[in-house]
Image 1 (cartoon, rainbow, N blue to C red):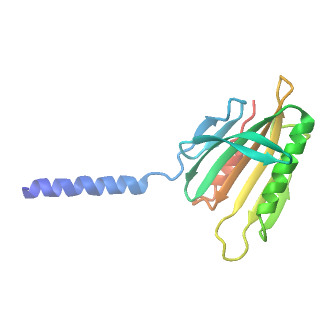
Image 2 (cartoon, helix red, strand yellow; image 1 turned 30 degrees about the vertical axis):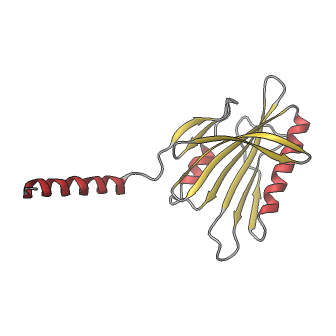
Image 3 (cartoon, rainbow, N blue to C red; image 1 turned 120 degrees about the horizontal axis):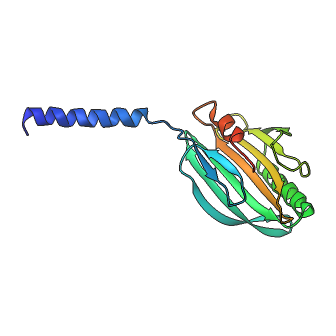
Length: 179
């Protein structure tokens, strides 16, 4: 190849490498969750799946929406309960199952305000720091919203891992909007 073409090829490769290095780890976008009305801010293109989750003595279909960006997984799970009593029982079982998986992690619980969420069951947030030497941390928020048809939409918003941006978790949780 002529020297000018080799030089030009190197410039193109260098420019491509520079652009890749400058691309943001977080590309925030609004994502509707499971047709239930919740809008979430996710930092990357979302993947979706459905799975059965054991909640107490029942197996519940849960819609999952999430993605990985900047060293963490950001996800929203959604289920629909037939009544407020069922919603409260399922959320208690969901929270107990999560706490049971945390082992020796230091856990801080809080009851944040979530606009338009039900007061019962009340929103609950857990922030879990792993034992010394472990790298994975967990931030999870459960909340519910009564629907016009009498059902109750249940949500679990999760950040698993340590995002490379200190603001990423805040953006994710503050970006949850109920109709």
